[in-house]
Length: 210
Image (cartoon, rainbow, N blue to C red):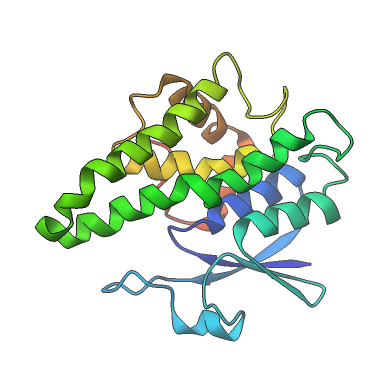
């Protein structure tokens, strides 16, 4: 059985969503952020040297990084259900969106978080960071025009991977200006599998607004 090392308020929530969509049995090992530093506990280093979540263990294989985990699950446990075949016309787009979330979109959002903590010292960086957030969210919003999913006409791991981008943007008050993304996120978060993952994962600060 797959074991998910789940950290509260983290990217590991999308791994739970993926597993619920696949109806794949799994168990959760819960980890809590430090109440003062908000960092992952040191115990996670016993699972993976980086000491971060998500991490899954499947038949002795330890897989870290949420994008890699979702790709692994899509290839090994999904039978193609939430992925795109490599010989399909949409596969390059699927590959792009799978890497876009952490390779591009999350960086300015994380910089926004860090500069918020710096207060006045981070103020000079704020305009550039805001512009980069808009650049990435505008790009995504245009890609979602008239669509429910990033690739094709069904949910894929690319949507699940990018859900945290939209959740983080909403938490920082950056999403409401992008109608297509707001619509998509509301629909994704209303899916029964998403809600089951939410129930099993526990309190989640980036979850649905209601």
